[in-house]
Length: 215
Ligand code: ADP
Ligand code: ZN
Image 1 (cartoon, rainbow, N blue to C red):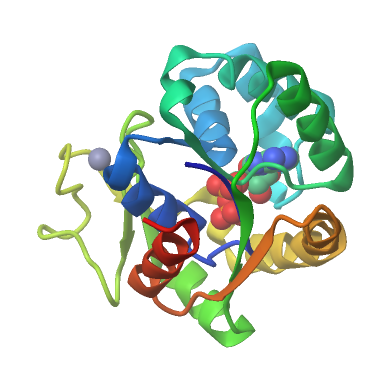
Image 2: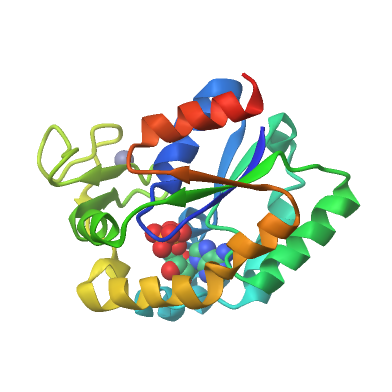
């Protein structure tokens, strides 16, 4: 399948993407994971992106577009992909449209994960992430803690709160989402690709997507 996952920070894009990869071998492409990996590895990209990310601001479009143009042409994308965290602005959505047309790739749909604001805030403050850049497994101190506190079940690395998960950065990320990313809902509606789902449960979202794709 070839999907865009839209939704506020904490809406569950990453969780849903990971569940969907198990269905048909489509790959999850998370620009947030790519950027955090680059920050940890100390690459040029990471150095350029870090300050924006820590503040809860978006990284400039040209950096992201450079990454995505290459990423979409890697062979593992042929089975399908789940775009998690991209596009995030109207210019990114326009650029993606151009890239896909050039590569002759058609999207199935853009799924918008709808979650009430209280749920989002609660999820973001209790979320913890494995700090190993190759793993980045997601936990929640309330609903899904690691088996051993502070240690990733999958790889044993420390499970930490992200730098952009302070209250201040969270509130900034939600504002950024409302200003820059929420307009994509209208964009994909016009494109005839929008599928809006109530996303309080990730399993329900996955089932809705399956039904919609006729699988
Ligand atoms: P969340 O969806 O929980 O906010 P992500 O892991 O998707 O988190 O992204 C973390 C940060 O990485 C964002 O706050 C932003 O700074 C940067 N980022 C990720 N994807 C993009 C993108 N497509 N365009 C610009 N910045 C991005
Ligand atoms: Zn891990």
